[in-house]
Image (cartoon, rainbow, N blue to C red):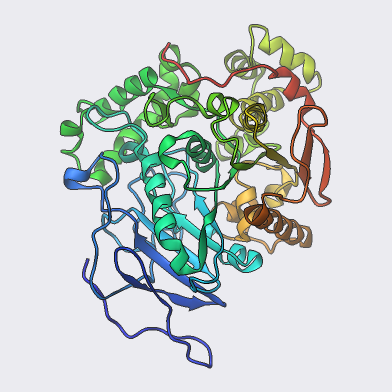
Length: 518
């Protein structure tokens, strides 16, 4: 990259100079914004193109002079179906996808503040750390700590099974980003020994994976997993889906073949296969209706087992864990598909047979929720299978392995759409970041000013998350198998026994194993 030496921007009446920090690859200049020093688009790895394409991340090349770190790096190639919108791509074009951003109260190496590292979600096929909904200024200011966000490869580039390429390249990118934090964050005022990784949805699945990956060992002390998806692929399933993905663009699933298509054209493989996935129900089973052909792969090397198995064996017993879910996770997807209230009993029965645990799962769910409508049953079983029970079981596995976990449930309903969305998937993001009008927040808050109780709950979110990052204690008791105490986040937050007792009992003893090829 060509180094820029433009005149440093200043702000405020004192005309403070723009902050400059030296990293292992070279010096970067940020901006002063609302009392913070903010740095955007710093490379933590080389562009994964050319000979580096589909490979593990490689070190970022060094630069001379001072590099301006004013703009977010370009997003990785992805399916834009859920996250397109104003502002998302107000960033440079190019292939430097692997970048980090830093919000810090003071880039003083002596400060040694706790560090939080954000990993975005997006079904492992989309997402970008520069999305407006992930603006970390409130977290950094309210918590008086350093916040980092990073990009990682998604979709075909990051998670497709490709012959000749390592599995889980997106996870390897995250490890490289955490290594950058270890090596550089002290210069930004952070403490490399007090790092907390946090993420939502696919980001939470990534956090769960990092907890048990040997390559991530020692890179963080605490972890927050918001709405952990239970979808991890077996190597056989990933290979079969990879073959189908490549066939969508008329190629074989090899590095040599797929490298002939530019990255931004290769995204069409996932975009066209996704809607067809339900046709593969007899081969891909529970993975087929998710219309997401990407997930972490239990390949036996980079990811040796599922997080639940590894945590129960004590793999992360020395790492503090905060994990939880939203009460009505799957309702978001029903709303986006315009299916709220439109599910027939036949569709509900099919979902119950496919996702409910045990040979009598459908009957057990109907008995546990006797007054539920078909839509409610359809939503409930997929909420439980996809997010809620994986999150609960992650806490239980951590405890079984000798570690400690704090558990929460968000039950406050989103005000958008007359409250019909409930406490749906993704609501925790605008509440945590305070970005009510950006990205998904614009839907969940209907573009209106957030009510006072939302502001209070948002402040509570940040206080708990940042306290956990600082001390390992979010402000309520750790989960145990006797009292099962959980922080319920609502207009009036309370600590109580796990609220979803009916679902907990239905899933008691269930193992979240890699999804198989049938």
